[in-house]
Length: 164
Image (cartoon, rainbow, N blue to C red):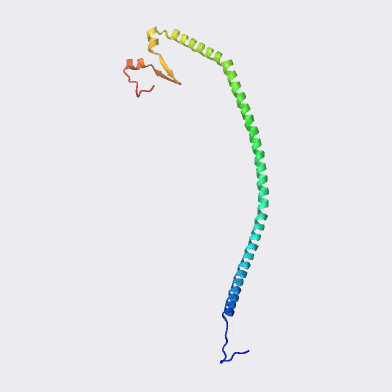
């Protein structure tokens, strides 16, 4: 049936609503199709990325495992060396104590005897009198010989700024 210019085409409200729903449904389906195509592309790219990472991660994990084993072996060796060093240190300490107790006392006595002999010979050869010896006494401080404080006062020197 053809509508002529004289005939009016009448469309009911239900038909208009049906056409609007069909157009809306077509737009919605098209939009969902585009979204699903893009989602499929994203999933393909993600799958490829995961496969590449897996291919690279497996050898890296194997290398890391081998490195850890090597490090553990080295740590075991260092631990053995440290225990040996501790034992050597303990033995050296015991040896030092033994030597000090065995030779220390007699060596101090020999040194004191030698010092006394040297002082006695020095006094005898110099022929110094008792007051002259006391005046020449010096105080020894960690390897240096410093004149006694009485000598400084007697000679008019101050105790500051003077070096021997």
